[in-house]
Length: 121
Image 1 (cartoon, rainbow, N blue to C red):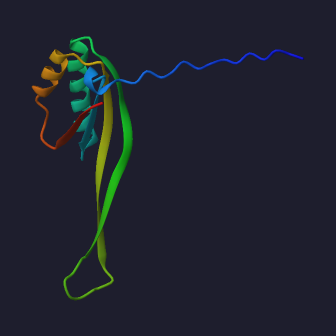
Image 2 (spheres, helix red, strand yellow; image 1 turned 180 degrees about the vertical axis):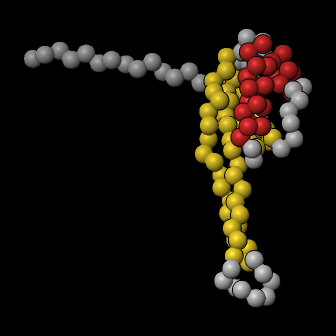
Image 3 (spheres, one colour; image 1 turned 90 degrees about the vertical axis):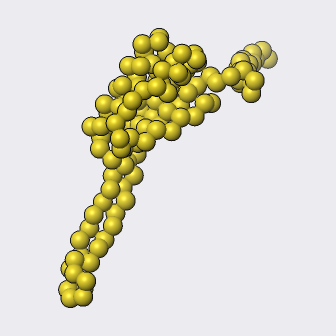
């Protein structure tokens, strides 16, 4: 008979609710990818200035909204135009942020047209 050894995996350590935030998840959205990339770079530079650990930016799938409109109001029902709006998205994680990093990120000035969602996890 052979002796089998069992290897136990270490238990995952979960943060308790009272421990404070362990990750700051920032989702940035914009219609123009150039403006979005500049904003993301500005966020990463601000976090790096305070020696925070940054993961990302992770590109997320583009939301495409398509609209079809009649070209004329009454005549030429078969003549239509199609328009689309593309919403580009990026995700950035900042691991174990300090208070001064969060304060610096709240005071950052980003261009109009850039939407930011911040979650503490």
